[in-house]
Image (cartoon, rainbow, N blue to C red; front, top):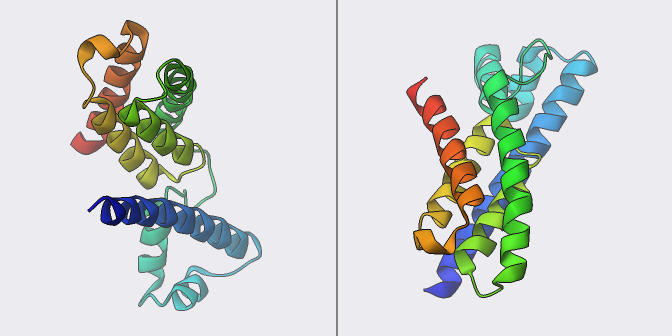
Length: 156
């Protein structure tokens, strides 16, 4: 059972890396002059609209602009939370949920917007397994703020 769960975790991490790679390649193709129809054919998609939707799901902006404010805000919160979790794991190396959440947030640093929100939700879930007394107040507050950002996206 443990090996199966570890393999699932590996699969999730690979998916994030593949999506990051796909996002970079689509951006490079578009920057190099490829049309959305050409991108769609390369991805095995049926239409240019499908390619644009895939790009947006990966967190890209079809016109190449900056990330949405909510994504920027969440990414900043996750960076702070990750740093706090690294210190917390140093203090209590036996805390599996803290290590797991920290690893998840490490993946989130370069994740596209869709994966970023998923990873944030997973980290919040992992940290929810800890007894409240095991989580310092500052970390608990950050977790609540991350949960609120993730919740905003779910409502949108």
